[in-house]
Image (tube, rainbow, N blue to C red; front, side, top):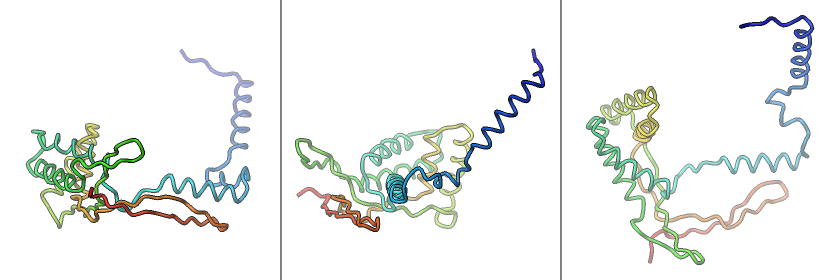
Length: 196
């Protein structure tokens, strides 16, 4: 059942909508609302940039341990083509090399499992491995259509490339020193990730 609105209701709705539009601020001008001083605004922008920072060189840790479990599970998946199953085993073995088996270090009263080394990935392209590239692209397309997040992640991980260890140390940030210009200097400590 539909009902029509009266001209008075229409005028009231239009007026309320126009008031809302007049008081709205375009997203590009939100920073110029002068709710914060310049110093506070600069600090907020730096903190947002720090929180959203992604490392260019990832360090193998808890996330990679979970990926290792998922890769081993996918390597046994009969619905995958042979190239992708073999890639799952290869990538799992490469990740395992980046992670220490069971090395722990005492931190205060707790024992913490050591992170692995830093690693990098060289993307798989049609030129470097044509059959694996084609299989991964096809899997990603199918997984996206079926909304299968695990297989979509796997296809993207395969296309990102096999993990290659590039170091055996961990960098720990001790302090952040902010100078009067707002620049940040980090005091860091390099720690060997191999237990002695």
